[in-house]
Image (cartoon, rainbow, N blue to C red):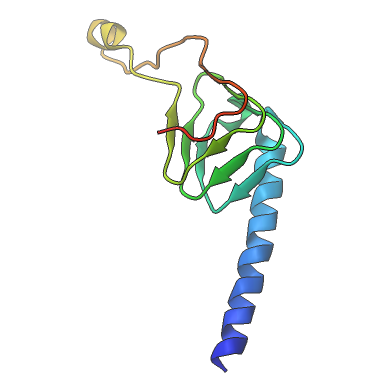
Length: 117
């Protein structure tokens, strides 16, 4: 009985990851061929994230693309990696009393990067 339960759970996780990958790729600014997502991740503003071809993203990655993020070809991001393209503009916060995100050109990760720490 235990073997059957494991097979059912494994099949469910496989289907869930396929749907998650399809949803993620549909909401990204662009995503190259051969890019794989291995486990769930949290991506804020996915429409500002461009991913090249043959990239690999491991579980529990957190990517905040408030400003644009471009990731080149053949890039691997390790598990639990954090990419932030935002910050708080403290000058306007003190002047206006409102938090505002900084605006800049964003992040660029070139081709053939094996891991980001």
